Length: 289
Image (cartoon, rainbow, N blue to C red):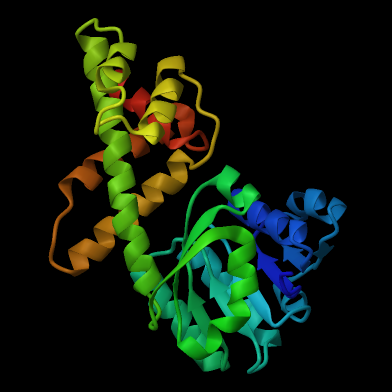
């Protein structure tokens, strides 16, 4: 039987809510905080405790999670939370915030005397709710054990990729480069079908049961063909991740022209009103010239 623990989740947006739900389902005690307290009400109904401020929240458990929109938001909330921490606390940073922001956040944790775990995740809303995320974690070996019940609840697999902050973010940026490329190429293929008056479903029939037949591409393709984009990974957040990839690779002296093109298409899609729709909505930017 899994060991029951107490955890704090700071940020109950799409992913934070799903993760908190998974923790509650596994019988853990969960305290949540969100800037908009209305977003915590469904979790409170499931048994979560709701804290009024980040510092009040972290007093409830040794291990606290941040799952916020970006590095700046995470830093602002962490500065409040760290006023109430002790040397026993472990900060598990699970949002995709990039390498530079992770280095800043790890420095904050060091100054506060708090252990820091860099653990971005692979997956979207539904995997978060089902506890089926992939956790890309990096931290010293001596702080890993208290994180195991957390990772076991929210994920189906934990991949320890290093001991220093930023190792998890690096792997996540590599994976998201592949993700943006797949969705961008798919959207362009369907845009070409539209331009050439080809039934787009023939693309999926042509590749069916072959090495190019990707279940994820089929799911996103259906959304594009129907022009319906229920949000799993939003255009806004995908564009943010594209910028993080460009920032990291530019710092390393490399260019990522495919990512840059997809990021621009995502930003165009946002301008068309699809910022909070699923990433598949970048298709609208390609057919609306």
